[in-house]
Length: 358
Picture 1 (cartoon, rainbow, N blue to C red):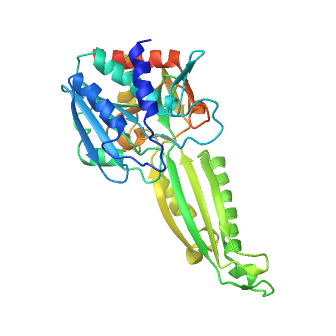
Picture 2 (cartoon, rainbow, N blue to C red):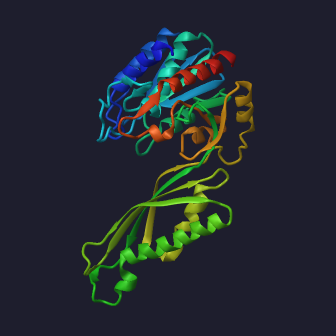
Picture 3 (cartoon, helix red, strand yellow):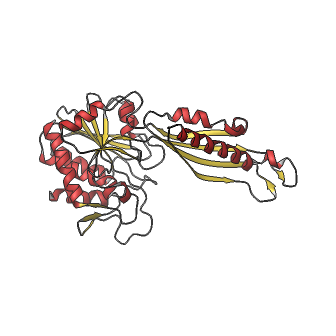
């Protein structure tokens, strides 16, 4: 393994980029460090600040056709660590630390590739993938940053196999209204906000089961639900937060429209959508050019992964995209997060091959 990978990873893990709280800006150490490495390797570097910790670092050398994308923010450290979360620890063939797998390990491998090559290369390091309201990739695309790119490699953990597809992600919050009062009133059956939510939920689950039976597996999860004040008070308000993950070819908009009015909810519910990301490939794309890219560069292929990535945002914008990075998703977001040194080495070799053979 190039020793520089671990040197870069040490610096990146030591930069506190927990999201939330996303308490950093364009002058954060992780951006300064990446900028210094890349400028010394002949890259033009542009840092864009979209406020509230939404920061992009875009680096370009020459006229590349492939864009590598990594997010540098991490989930919060959390509890249960047996090693320092914000320090690199190397033991028994593993590199430990928050973000080592998701996905600062990939970023470290890319920095090493940038140093050891001279060919055209492009990198987008973003900072808001893990928290609410991400906008970095959307702002990059809206500004034409992907113009001229023929392929995007999003470096989420896939065991260093090229994932060509994944489910979308839809996040929806709902507020059900009721008419509060004493629970002895017979109208509680109909006027209780919790009951109205329950009727909607029953209908939503029936709908999703029906979709699965029709050959359209719909991954639906009610993650949060709350309402009311006491057992003897008719609930005047109830809240829920659900998510859905749809397969390529399915539509978040179609599912949301189908669910929103079930069980009488059109009279009692108000909905907001904190986030909606399409599947990969996005609607209208067949992924054939991405498959040919994998063949040209002899990339091992994993047809799909179950988690959502920002590769679908590039795909929805008409840019071919795949997911390929070191480690496995089961190692991410955990106490004592780790990535195998062998995976970092393999990622370096693959990224190096893509850059030098482009």
